[in-house]
Length: 330
Image 1 (cartoon, rainbow, N blue to C red):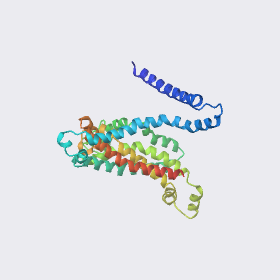
Image 2: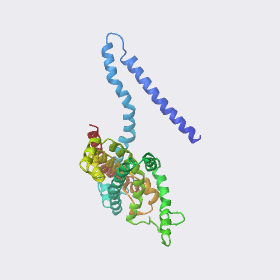
Image 3: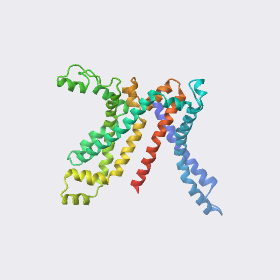
Image 4: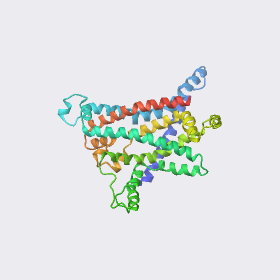
C-alpha cells in the first residue's frame, strides 16, 4: 500500500476515533448515566457538568501516560535490571550507573554537553536579541526577520547536510574553504576531524537554527516595553546603547530567561546534528549519541542509565522554566 494512502487512513482513523469517542462518551454521560430528566434532574446536571471536562482531558492524559510516563518508568527499571554481563549484574542494581560514571567516554560526552549548554543558548539568545532590536529599526525589518527565522523550518538533519557542504574540505564545494582560497590559502581545511574543539563547529548549526526562535519571542517582548520609559531616558540624555542595555533589556529579562531555558532544554536533547556530522568521532560525542550507540549495540541497561541521567539533568531546567513562564504570565 502506498505511504500516502497509509497516512490518510491513519489520519481518518485517528480523527474518526476521536469524534466517535467524544460523541459516545457525552451520549453515555447525558443519556445513560446522568439523564437530565426525572426527580434528580438538578443533581444529574451538576454531576454531568463536573465530569464532562475530564472526558476531554482523558485522551491527552492517556496519550501522555502511554508515550511518556510508561517509557520513563520502563527505562528506569531497565537501567537497574538489564546488564551486559553476569559480572556487572553481581555488583548490584546500580552497577550500570557506576559503569556509566566511570566510563571515560561518558565524561567526554558529558563535557561536550556542558559546552553545548553554555554556548548554544547564550549565543542564540544574544544574537536573537540583537537581531530583534536591529530589525525593528529597519524599514525592511519584516523581510530580515523572515530570513533569520527561515532556518527554523529546516529539520536538524537537513541543516546538518547544509552545513556539511559549508565545512567541506574541497574549496570547490565548501564555502569556508572557498573563502580561505580567495585570500590565498592553499589546500582545503578539514573543520571536523575528531578534535574536541570541533564541537563548536557543530554548535554553529544549532545556533543558526535557534536564533530565529529567540528573535521572534524577544522582538515581541521589546515591542511591549513602555514608550514612557524610553522617552524619559532620551530626555535624560541616554544614548541608544544605554537605552537598549539599561532600559529595554532589564524590562524584558524574564522573557530572555524563558528563551534561554527553552533553548537549554532543547540542547540537552539534541541528537541529530552530532549524529549526522560527527558521529564517527568520539571526541565530539554527546550523551544522546552515546546512549543510542549503546542501545544499538544491545547494551540496554547502559543506554537506559544514560537516558535517566539525561532526564535528571533536564528536569531542574524544565521546572525552573515552567516557574518563570508562570511568573511572567502573572
